[in-house]
Amino acid sequence: MFVLLSIIFCCFVYLISVKLLYNRFKKLWPVLLNNVSLSPCTKKDLNVLSTYDRYDFNSRNSEKDNLHTLNDNRVLIVTAHPDDECMFFAPTILKLVESNALVHLLCLSSGNYYNQGDQRKKELVDSCAVLGIPANRVTIIDNKELPDDPKADWSTALISALILTHIRAHAIHLVLTFDEGGVSGHVNHIAIHKAFRYLVSVGRIPEDCQVLCLHTISIFRKYLSVLELPISWFLPSSFYCVIGPEEYRRAKEAMLRHRSQLLWFRRLYLLFSRYMFINTFRAITVETKNVKIY
Image (cartoon, rainbow, N blue to C red; front, side, top):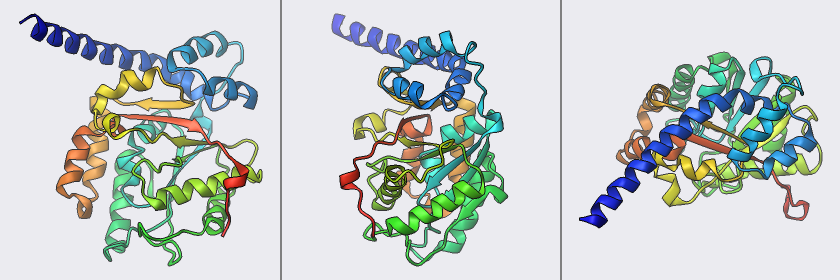
């Protein structure tokens, strides 16, 4: 009986901690927006701090540095397939749109693996409308050299050119994309990260533009849903977003617009994935010797 009561008590305390951390995040959000406008030196310092430490650091410095928020900035989300935007980036998109950022989406394929490309392009536009991204800020690349295929090697040179053109054309200040794990391990996701590593390594990214990568986490953490929040809170990250119940309903509604993709396991994903509630990002890291161009 004692063991059972102890377990119940620990679960209760954990749930309370999730609620308290979410409330803390809502207070911290304006400061997090300011982070993307910090000087390169300061951002490097912030990257090695836990969320708790960054809160104290920014609270002391946000006023004296006279930082501005994202409402005058342009943000680009770079994905590989229709549905990536809501399966992985929905918390971030919703929070940025809520903060009046101009969010653009660049999707590098039409998702034509099962010859459903035309349908999936329409679903993507509908999903983005739910998330708050208008159709005129959604760009879908339909190129035979970039097929939706887990066995296809996407050209780093081609991806890099497409991304750089988009950044320059829309004067992008912040880019959010996949890290080296691709979140789900999909090779098309990883190919995008390789392209960004190349662009950063050769100094092609404009100086006023940051590139942040969505953390790939363990399978255990990935399916803890919002209960994963205390873990992410105390781990280092450069930028993060957390959403509540109302925003989650919008993220879920966006995914439901992808009717062609609503298989049973994706419905479970909507319920249990941490990425439907929490996004954490880190600055891109580059080892030049490992960057290959083809």
